[in-house]
Image (cartoon, rainbow, N blue to C red; front, side, top):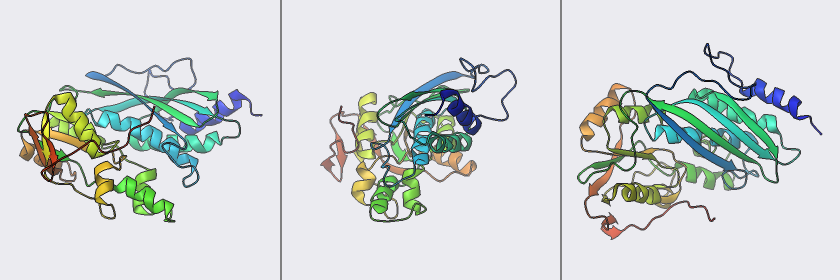
Length: 303
């Protein structure tokens, strides 16, 4: 049996940031202390569960920690924000390699520049990682999913289906370093793209965590509009079904009445050109793909 304090000391050594800004307090006290937020404050929480969000028979435990952080940070990207800090709460049964799990958490925190400033550990029956992220949107306000307007062009930041295709390939025996498998086990939040889109004045934005086929409906519901989907950018190696409903791509879905400005700002920052996939329409009931009604297609938890 491991003592809690000893485990926490080892975890703090893994996730603790060495260069902490003056005046801030991170891991080790009763609460973290941060410098004032610039602009609007963003807060989001995600929970990743072993066996639900990651197949433990196919992937190392590090990947669960990595995905937990990056999926939470992606919610900030979807608002055009930048991360400031995260707290992580882990539930696990006895014998779980908590150091391995937190190495994945630390990798994601370092790569997204989102320091882990605190958290909690508790014994439980399943391995789960709850991540709460705090972010900020300096300057203009955060981008909501409720601002799409009739006539807006709909775009995404990249081709879709890579994560779902990676899971399929891993189940078929592909190695962990297969590019599509990496897309599933180590997803990347589009932070730079989200900030660029906010600066370009997009009207609505969200991340594609559950699949275009359902997330596009969610954006339309929030904005009280319809849409005509005219193109589906399918990632190399993925199927149409995976691109439409696979989920966990974490590309950004955007609408704008000035797509040329959006492309120009992306180009000026060295970002991949966003892909046009459709148009927003006024009729809330009009939601089509290939001239046929598009029903919601994607990942939903059964609660």
